[in-house]
Image 1: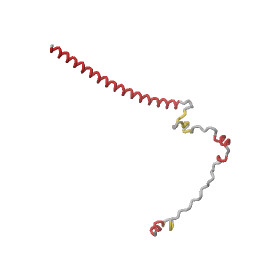
Image 2: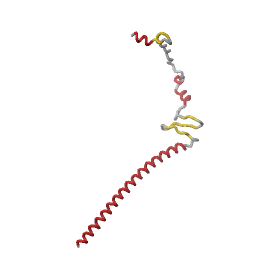
Image 3: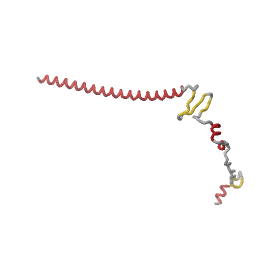
Image 4: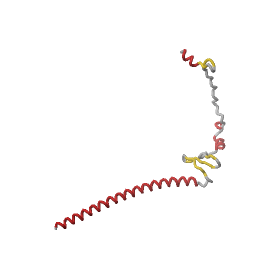
Length: 134
């Protein structure tokens, strides 16, 4: 126990460690919006809040569908650009799949052609053997 008391002594700041009590927090809100009735709040805050919009460096950004989108003049060209990029990725994936299918089909055709030539060669050999026997 005495070791504990000695460890709590801080010679630089005083005899013992004793933190000051923090003052109690104010429970009342500093905002007066909660005291306003519904119609006044709608006038103050607006009826429809909509997606968050901010202006950074002269460019307007809007948060829609989980992404921040720039609004260039309100013509929606950025949305169109993102839609086209997404469609481009889909088409590239489809193109890669089709290339793979073509490669598989060419392998199958090659295998079938080789089998055909081998069978044709066997038929010729059998015919020549049969002619020799006659």
